[in-house]
Amino acid sequence: QVQLVESGGGLVQTGGSLRLSCAASGSIFSFTAMGWYRQAPGKQRELVAIITSGGHTTYPDSVKGRFTITRDNAKNTVYLQMNSLKPEDTAVYYCAARAIVDWDNWGQGTQVTVSS
Image 1 (cartoon, rainbow, N blue to C red):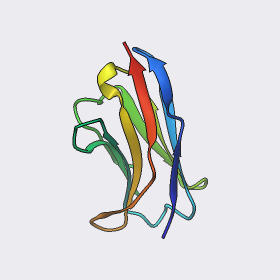
Image 2: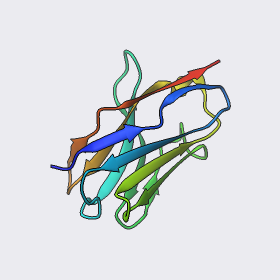
Image 3: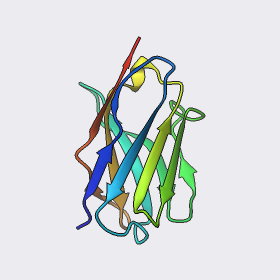
């Protein structure tokens, strides 16, 4: 099973930017999609961004226009560029990989805190 390790989280002020990285221990080329999810305290985990093996991206309205997901197959790494951050973006962010239908592989998460 491919291991996913997130990095790049931290504390940032409202309006600031962060770039999260998700490094895989093996090839991500075989996954149909890579994604980022987040979970805030007391809330359910929610989708943040998805990128398919063909490069198609999907975002919820809450982050559309502010977040960008990219992938580097050569480096087996997925990135999440987050701009114009808001306090409501505060959460633990998880990287995930989808083999066919289910999101089978998950990272341990990285904390993002946006101060007001």
